[in-house]
Length: 360
Ligand code: FA5
Image 1 (tube, rainbow, N blue to C red):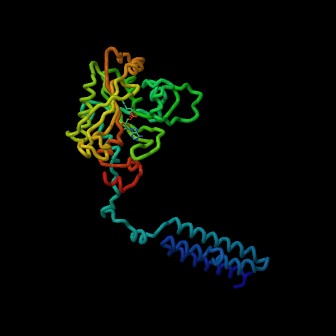
Image 2: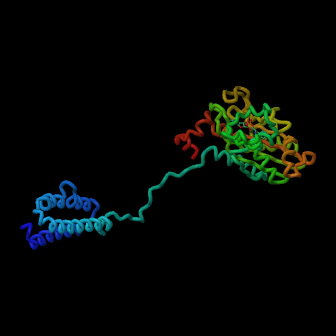
Image 3: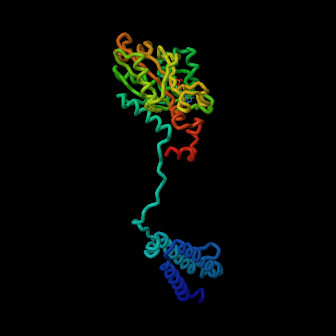
């Protein structure tokens, strides 16, 4: 070929173009397309690079324009062949080889299961639902008013220290009653419910609570409670005792005994801690019940008239002279630990599948 003869040049470039088209028509896999790109457009060894080095750069100045035009035309043909081949995807035969048989049975994914705390919480709620209680919920981020003040913990009252509180930062400018905190118990939902519904009322409230406490085998800074509230005319302490005795028997078996110990909560008067006979030793005394035969499980009491007075501001039906009621609050983790013989509360929150799978 003479570089100056246009006919020679035409023939030479036409042959190259033909070669490229043939090669491109046979491309059927992404690997082959990539190979084609390297052979033709590879920056170091590609045919067009070699052509540019051997023909274009060494061409006489007067021939360079002619050669350059043909070179560019060939290059855009190769580029569009490559684009078509890449866009076209795998050939029909390649697709057929990879086809999925949708009639084959699928591989089974792992099935989730209820967390033991959720399960225990649902069981507790079921026991009370069967007694005609409805179920309520309330916010986890609560105001000082609902968590403390309306539950008869006045500002500065030492009883607040019994529930070391995690507060939301930067609220100093708000009045104390509006400041936000992580609720330390589910009791504030008692007030929220009474503000919404006139008596009579029977409700259980499951939920998560938080306290600024060091974690140990029986304490966690995040845990769950189920709150209960019953208000009507002539509700007495015997109703409270009968209800909780029935609930403990439903949860732990009919041979379990209960006893009520005097206690103090600002929102109940009188108040009591409920103990059940140790389910591990049947009340004889063992390591789990510290040889006492009894295990403490929850707090309860008759609703304090001061709490009804707060509720009566929005619902006059809660007149403490006309109605009475009881309330209780139980720790779900403690009950789950008893039911399932778990000795460390932290295991519920560890995310360890070996532990959790035992409840699936
Ligand atoms: C209360 O929180 C009261 N609101 C309960 C109540 C409601 C009394 C209605 C009267 C009427 P207390 O702080 O004792 O009370 O907590 C109740 C239960 O939560 C305890 O019996 C215990 O089972 C559980 N609990 C308390 N602190 C922790 C903790 N750090 N980790 C796990 N469980 C806890």
